Length: 426
Ligand SMILES: [Mn+2]
Image 1: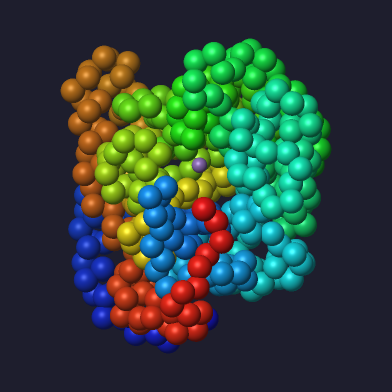
Image 2: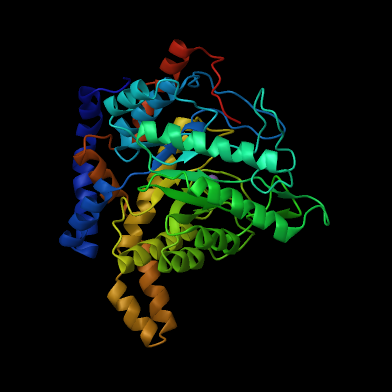
């Protein structure tokens, strides 16, 4: 443990007076009751941290380590535990198998519980070949023309479900690199039919309280077609599979300018949105820090998520599998994740401030100007004090990144794990 309660109190104490003033200011703007309501909802909200985001990500041109990276699953859990101590909103971890195989699930589960962490969706990997595997995924996995490759990929997914069951997960997230890079390479219908048939075999192995989350992506690693390339294809598969199959929306997996907020709105309406991957991007699947490029889009997406979840009677905190999916090439991954969680909480708080009744009225009256005013009023409210207050009330740090830096946590990690420690993953 790198953080203790006394240090947290020493950090929070001098900040309380200013925070109280800021809270008073926002109370005057939106009302004390509304503030309390938002803080209470923020306290319940948590975002899963992916096990692959705790080390250096790299690009196809190179990878630059950070030092002190977690090289075992136990160390990754320790890192997420540290984030959770600081921000009290990172209480879940999402594993990627085979990058992080829990050899002894019972002890891993106990270790996670000791940090107050649970296991969110488990992720399979049929986009890379593993040592000793008989068939290659070079030309795809679940959509492959060769049934032996498909069977191997199905068996891997079933194995991932077993690991997940042992850890207490309740969903399998499936992202396929399957596609084609040249016109004529694939018969689209056969590729889709093979994918569906393979997914049916996986769905049949799903425990009754589990969801299968079907993620889509517009391009990369294939550049002519992706077999699950957009929300329509993911929705089609999920619909054919059954009620426990849902789509997973990753903010970075769309073509430029796609209206992601409209996509999530309709998927929620159809009960086909199961999970959400946060990141930000300028061009494609850039996997940058959440909210660093386009925080307004993040807010608009959140507004639709909240409005759509309320319409369906879903609990915000648990109604969807919330997860960060990012890659860290320049920033210390832990600092980046703290920033990402902060951006998510801020957008959530802003979305909660939207006066939905007034917005509906303005929409009914086709008062376009009023609609924009209402949306932007909430967006331009400085909700940072509410997020900080929710965190302090739960024993976290008022300013997590500052705390992390003041206590030289990366330096401590480097001293203990070594400068060259390398995380497993991409
Ligand atoms: Mn993703």
